[in-house]
Amino acid sequence: MAGNIELLNSVLAQAKAENRAALVGYLPAGFPTVDGGIRAMTEMLDGGCDIVEVGLPHSDPVLDGPVIQTADDIALRGGLKIVDVIRTVREVQAATGAPVLCMTYWNPVDAYGVERFAADLAEAGGAGCILPDLPVEESEVWRKAAEQHGLATVFVVAPSSRDERLAKITAAGSGFVYAASLMGVTGTRESVGLEAQELVGRTRATTELPVCVGLGVSNATQAAEVAQFADGVIVGSAFVKRLLEADGDEQAGLAGVRALAGELAEGVRKRF
Image (cartoon, rainbow, N blue to C red; front, side, top):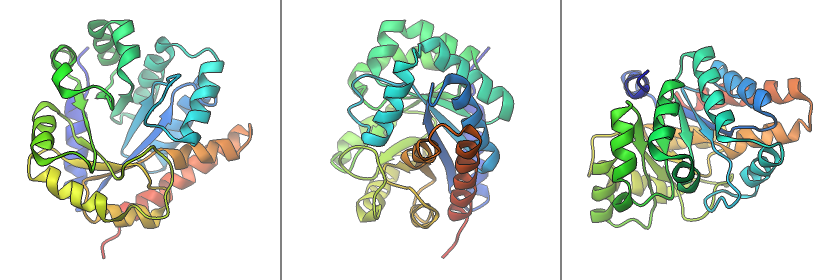
């Protein structure tokens, strides 16, 4: 089975046709449990997310702040394996019909086997991979496998990226470009700010790919702010927080992520 890059592209194009940003939600697989994570991601998509990113928890998550690190720890202590991540992608995609990506650091993919990982992700109906720590210069083996299996390769750009570097990264990517709104780790912020808007403008000057902004968006007001200048709004820590706040009450956690997805979906549709 080929991957779902075409589905990803069509969902992003549909959001653009509706004159709005796409809403992208993120949760680590295996949090709070494998089955609980699958149910939570399904609720996020049913509640208003257009796309979901399934995180592959890592013991040294350099890009992730304390909230996502806490969730990763819970998943890893629960014995999460890559097969569980693939299963999460498969079941969420089958339940919702939405594009499902995997967000992962490079080491687990390399250890699992690049070709094997791409084949398994595609077979599960995955739309692609976001690889925040894979330098574009070292990405050819992955990109070839991804292309062969119909998967997007989403690279991350940051405010520190110079223009020629942006052009190099965006030329190698597919699906969309993940614009990190600020320097630092994931987490909620008081404001997402002008740095993100400037980065989106500079990135758009190098590519026709949609540019989606992540890191720091946690509520409908911020989602609406970012939606004015980005093609997509990515939210992770705020969803994780809703599940952590539920403190083991699964129904409360599911209701929390669904409600947040609905609020954010309204935000990305606001026009000022």
